[in-house]
Length: 452
Image 1: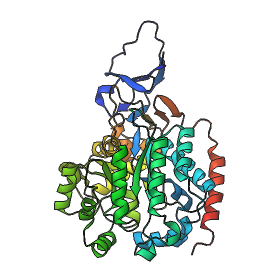
Image 2: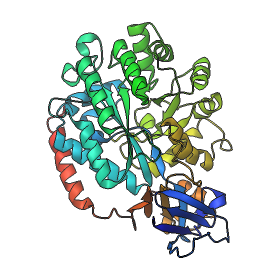
Image 3: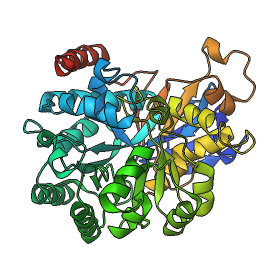
Image 4: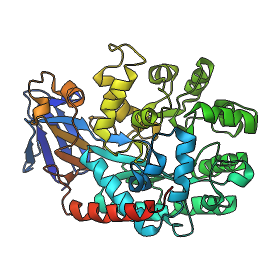
C-alpha cells in the first residue's frame, strides 16, 4: 500500500477547501480536509502526519520558460546594460564554448535553485548545440531525474546564422536535417505522454531571428506527428517586430500563422508587443503566453498584456527566463515580480496576489498542456510547496498568502514532487550545495574568461 501523508492544518492554503490540509496517497492528492475536519482513513491505515500549522501551503509552482545553461553567465560584464539584440550578440560567442560538464553543472544548479524556491515543474528552452555539447537534452534529463524535478525539456534550435541574415554567429547554428533528426530521437527516447509524467519533450525553434521559415514549419509537422507541444520566443522586443517585417514581410503573429503555429499546442515566451487584433487571434487559437517579468525589466523589453491575453482566451503562465537576463532562478520571487510589474499596467484591484499565484500554477499548467498539476485538488499530482513566515520580513503580517508575495518570500521550507519530499527544512537531501556552487562558479569563470 502506498504511503499516506496528511499535511495537517496549514497556516493558510491557496485552496480554501483545504484549510484543514491535504491527504497524499502515493503520488496524488487523495483528499482535501476542511477547516476543523479530519481525513477519512481506511481501517489499519497508518498515515504520516506533517504538522503544517506554521506553513503556507501552495501547489508546486510551475516555471514555463528557462535557459538552465545561462546560470553560468549571470551578470556577465560583456552583456551588462544592453537591450536584447546587443545582449545576445555579446553572449553568443561566450555560450558557443559550452561543454557537457558545464551543461550538467548549470542544469543541476538551476534545478536546485528552482526547487528551493517552491518550483516543482520546470520547462527549459535549450537551443545551443556547439560541437562539445551535442547531448545537452540528455544531460538535462539525467540531472532532473537525480533531483526528482518534473520537467518539460524543449529541443531548441538555431539554423539562421549571420550568413543567412539571422542574428546568431555561424558557430552556434546547426543544419536543419540534423535538428529534426535529433528532435525525433529525443521524443522517441524521453517523452512520456501519460498523466503524472516526470519528463516531457517539446520542440522549440529559438526565435524568428535565428531559424528559417522551413524549420518552423517542419518542427510543427514533426511535433504533431508525435503529439508533443511547440514553444518559441515571440514578440519580445520592437527589434524583433522590425526584423520579422524586414525578413518575412510580416508581423510576428502573422508569421506565426504562416508557419502553422497559431494553435493551442503552442506556448510562447514573452509575448509583449501584440496589438489588440493580435491578442484576439491568439486567444481564439488558445496559444499560451509565458510572462517573464524580471527578464523583461532587465532587458527593458516592455510589459506583457497579461489580463487582456487571459480575457481573450490565452493561458498565461510565468517563467524566470534565462539566468543571464533575470539573473536568478527563483520562482516565488518571480511570482512577486509579476504582481508588482503588472500593477504598473493594470489597477491593483485587478492584479491581486491571487492572480499572480494563478499565473504561476494553473496558468502555467495550461501553457504546458497539463491537467494533472497546478491545483490543490483531489486526483492531482502531489506537487506541493510549503513556506514558513518566520523571518523578520514577515513580522506583523496579517494575510499569510498575501504576505508570502508582498513581504518577499525567497525560499521554501518543504517541497514535494509526485508525493516525494524533495526539499526538507529548506535543504535538498543528499545534495552538497556548497560543493555544487564552487564547481559551478569555477566553470562560469572558465566560460566567461576572455569575453569582451
